[in-house]
Amino acid sequence: MGGGASRPRRGVTVTWLELADDTPFGLDNLPYGVFSVAGAPARRIGVPVGDRVLDLTAAAAETAAAFAPLLTAGVLNPLLAAGPGTWRDVRASVREWLTEPRYADRLRPHLVSSTEVTTHLAFEVADYVDFYSSEQHALNAGKIFRPDATELPPNWKHLPIGYHGRAGTVVASGTPVVRPHGQRKPRAAEAPSFGPSQRLDIEAEVGFVVGVPSTVGTRVSTADFADHVFGVCLVNDWSARDIQAWEYQPLGPFLGKSFATSVSPWVVPLAALEHARVDGPPQDPEPFEYLRTAGKWGLDLVLEVRLNGHLVSSPPFATQYWTAPQQLAHMTVNGASLRTGDLFASGTVTGPEREQRGSFLELSWGGREPFELP
Picture 1 (cartoon, rainbow, N blue to C red):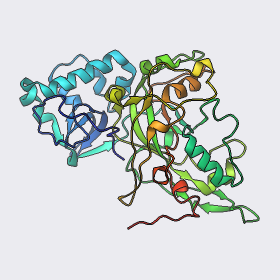
Picture 2 (picture 1 turned 45 degrees about the vertical axis):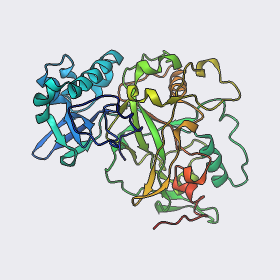
Picture 3 (picture 1 turned 30 degrees about the vertical axis):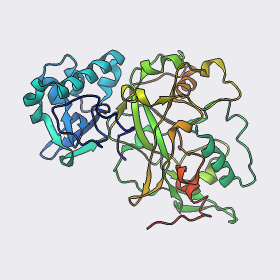
Picture 4 (picture 1 turned 180 degrees about the horizontal axis):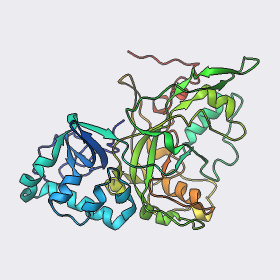
């Protein structure tokens, strides 16, 4: 699970580095993460560029940058909490360092080959919320779990449906996941049984990382989204479908979801996705006032789902019915506060075509339509 959330624009900025034309880590991306290297276990803040990682902790100290103290904790949280003004300053500085030749000799010692780094969870997760914002996924899941279902739940187009997950089991991509145990009851069984999940699934999602907190009892409006949200990461919300199917009524996901959520090691700042912003799908009925947005907050991103390296799906994120600012506004409309390091995810990203389904549940239609691999 990588961190290149969109293809960079080419030929925009000249750098003293040698970058491949097709690198997902060009100067228009510049995501942030945490890494270490063999022999030096201390965790550092890094920015991947091309096939290397800039040790941002060392580079900021080398250049005596004012924001250097924010990069010494081994996690992104101090930078996240600093707010949009600092986020802009750091990004502008990194771009300047990598484009102005006068910095080349000073910064080359702080560029590490990507093959030599070990990545870690980039931020301490405060709270985790998972949404259910793809209309096509909601329709598919309803038909699979409830074969007689023909429509969305009656509340689905009135509010972004979500649930609170377990922050303590959010892990960096690549962390081994232990197959969960729980109760399951197939439709044909007379009684439930207990044991390891037999229907372990993935969910291709996009996550949003909160930087600036809010006060308990205060709503965060859709207009204030970019004042609080730092950036975007890829998310795989692992799902034990057999456990989920037996437990989810009437209170929703629990053991079928809480055992693991994987996130990409690199967090792409919102500033890197300005060119990817598009209008979201039309919403009917018109949302309540607190859910209305100004500007374009759909994101034209394409995810890839691979099984054993084989591409099986390419879900389009621009089709998501509810946008991230709407999700954030709904999370806080009851007065719930934001905390630095909060993570909220889009829910499974699924498009209208079979090759755009974002879970194995949908790709195999609940196991009834096997799909071929090489």
